Length: 154
Image: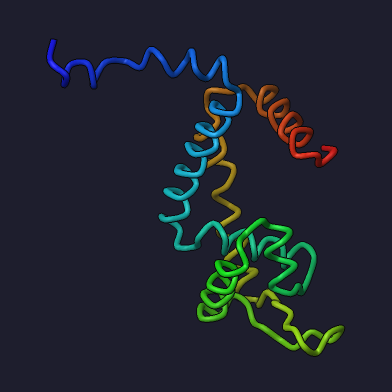
């Protein structure tokens, strides 16, 4: 049997590894969902970070880049680029923070709210496609378990 035949064979070790090492299975699942999300947003012209920032700004109002970075778990240096891109596109603007004149608050614009609505409209289909191997009950259970794992009390 050539090495090409072996390389194309159905994986037999990973299922065993995933069963033994929950951390490895979770990392693999996370990477798979992240790739699916990247591919999905790539077709809609709004990056994942941009989508999350617009979503948070629309939900909670103006925030500093530091707050956005901490809440969304996006590295601060990456957050600067995300906010730059949103500002360049007219989806957000930076204004002096009225509570701390040394910092800026990022605010979603009307154009950004409209773009967010368009992006959000495609999320249910994306989630259905991505989690098609799970029933709705299993998806709810997974959300609860992940919330507990992350200490979110969901």
